[in-house]
Amino acid sequence: MTIQPIKWKKNRLFLLDQTRLPERERYIECRTYLDAARAIKKMVVRGAPAIGITAALGIVLGVEAIPQQNRRRFLTRFEKICQTFAATRPTAVNLFWAIKRMKKLVAHDPFPPLKELKALMKKEALKILEEDVKSNKRIGAFGSQLLKNDDTILTHCNAGALATGGYGTALGVIRAGKSQGKRLHVVADETRPFLQGSRLTSWELKKDGIPVTVITDNMAAFMMQQKRIDAIIVGADRIAANGDVANKIGTYSLAIVAREHKIPFYVAAPLSTIDFSIKTGREIPIEERNSEEVSHISGKRVVPKGIPVWNPAFDVTPNRFISAIITDQGITEKPYGKNLKKLISL
Ligand code: MRU
Image (cartoon, rainbow, N blue to C red; front, side, top):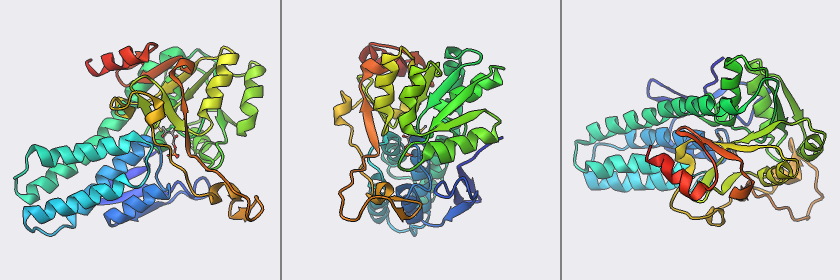
């Protein structure tokens, strides 16, 4: 079953509305770049690679709408479009990576006819989408070697087809394992407050016939203590040069508990998620989202009015808790500072 969270059809961008899953499967059309930027902000589309792809295609929508004026005005508008996307969500580095790729095209050849430049941009954005699916499959092929028949794997948030161009990173590893004939069972953390685990991970695994059990986040430690988890695999929003990993809030505590119970803790991510410009996870900007995501459940208030709420969307897991990072160029282990660098030269 192919799940496509992002579709580009006849020069139009369609996004599977992840705020409505699992009750409703509907695509919304982004007619303008502002529609696409809003969709990222509101998490109609989410997950680091999917955000990057949407921004690239959103930039295409934006530049297509710029009339064939002089080049300077084009560049000013292009810059504004890029800035709008850069301001949507701060943590997932794939967003900035994709914007940079689109900017590179302009910088590379500053003077082709605008029509040509727009065509080049469309080609590049579609390439980013296509490459992402391929890279997920490579992550799957590498990572599945770490799984044994009958393993039960705990995952947090959604690092699946919905969070990427399709297939997934953490869930891609599980999909690849299944396609090799391994019997695998997934335990999906609910992932408060946005419920990516209970709403999205379970939805997409069910579609693929992969057995999944949903637990609330506070049940994970007990399950590990009971020896019911063989491995943990999560995705990443940004990996610092030293291997510290920013991922969905709650990942850090899972990693600590996994260490206590000697359960391998794996991170699966494409190279585009590694930010070599920052040395450690302390430099990763952590998004704080609307307090209503915590104070309300399905529109109903669950925290008394006037009580302060804190809602950081991500946390940082220090590299020492990570057993291996599974990338599209291979599996890497400690020391990450040295070994991650080696991957880019492959
Ligand atoms: O806030 P979200 O839903 O965008 O957060 C998503 C995650 O934390 C994922 O684990 C991460 O982006 C990896 S997706 C392949």
